[in-house]
Image (cartoon, rainbow, N blue to C red; front, side, top):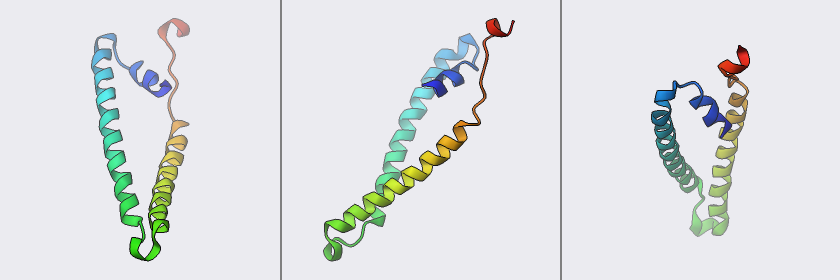
Length: 92
């Protein structure tokens, strides 16, 4: 939410509805693509079920979680570079 607020505060008042619509659309598309990618990672990294049984599927899930952890760490590191904004009222 703070990131959305910071992003929309950069827009002029007349573009805020379009910015909100783009934000919502991109968030939905990114979540669908992210889910598909993670399921693909999980499926491709799962070990042979005939040989390993359920442990092979668990291995695939663990690899998917490691991928998400790496992406989350990158996201946290990038969050430190978000510029703060001040409203015109505070700076005046």
